[in-house]
Amino acid sequence: MSVRRKLILIVFGALVLNLLLLLGCYNLFVSDRMANHFDNMQKELDQKTVEICRALSDAESAATLGSFAQEDGHLALTLETLDGHILAQTVAPEGAALYLNAVAGVTVGGDACILRATKYVPVDTASRIVPVRMLLHVEIVLICLIIALASAAIYLWYVRPLEQLKQFVLGYRMEGRMPPAAARRDEIGQLQNAFSALAEELAEEKRLQTRMIASISHDIKTPLTSVMGYAEQLKKKKLPPERQEKYIGILYAKARTIRDIIDEFDEYLSCNLESSLKLRRVTADEIMQMLRDDYEEELAGTLAVRCACPDAVTDADMVRLRRVFDNLIMNSRRHACERPLRIEAGCIEERGRLAFSVADNGCGVEEESLEHIFDPLYSTDAGRRVAGLGLAICREIICAHGGTIHAENNTMGGLTVRFFLPLAAEGEGRR
Figure 1 (cartoon, rainbow, N blue to C red):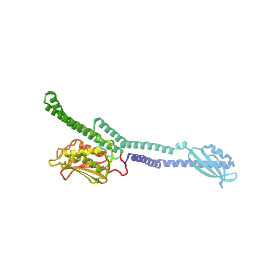
Figure 2: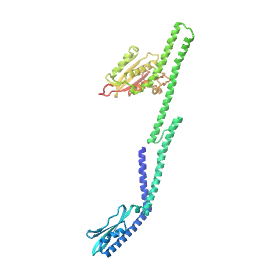
Figure 3: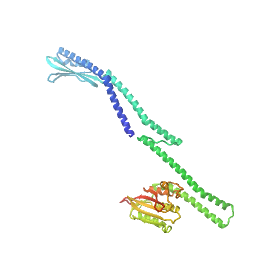
Figure 4: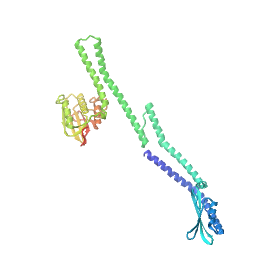
């Protein structure tokens, strides 16, 4: 249940509890005293009315009616005949909270009349009535009690969990302690679980970055050590020209290796930015023809390209897609077995998507490693060795296009990588 609903229930429950307790106190302690008090007030008004009737009978005139009302500032009198004709009437006082009525018969000037008396009780006077004052005191006590209980409930259910969450945040920030997951399902629990999940993601990201930096550092150190060794040879010894030329060639090759590692790392950092894509409307046939043009000569007799849906259309960045196919084909060539390498690339339309595949007859990958080969710098010693950022870059590019990618072992004994791109919506122009 949400916090808002719980707070509404707390407020509603407090009101209901207050009403029930107030009614209970009234019925048990106040109602009898209240009834007795008003019975006495009614008797006093009845007696007062009878006295006024006697005075009017003796005066034999209604002119003195106002004087009786002035004696009691909270009394209103009306003298009328039996047929309802008003002979005299006084003005009712203002600011009354309660009133009582009394009626008595009277003979004025030989005519039978009715005297109606109304006793008005002002607000300040009503509050001084003992039963009313008692009821007000009870209400004040109940309100204080309910506020105390509601405050305790709010503190236990909401304030203290928020304070604990604050301590989890400070503990994670200052000491790196991972926050635990919460069992509650309201907004506070969702917030704590979201923070816990975020902390796990940040920790995993930190481990990934550490592993990536360590791997790149190792990959750079190896050619860099060779560069330093050959540079020392060129610096300290007089070598024949042919040896110098050989060493210079090796230095250049090692420098290119270092550059390629850095370029691959830079591309991985930038390829996951969706805003950097330059999308345009292309057909499946254009994409597969690009693959043929790039590898027709280099992989003649090795690569087979088929397209079962040449007219299917998608929005894609052709430069980035070329990088995806390059990485997949390079991966197949790097992990080829002793038998002649065979690579098959295809495209079909499947459930509203374009499905591309690159399959080889290489060594394949252990089943438990298939879901990890797209992780940056993941490697395994079983079967084929998968390392570097190539497949991770493929996943980032495909995800930036709004697609998905996965790998599976095939019947040729090698690996098949399949990725899916959404079909372009009809009627949209080029971007």
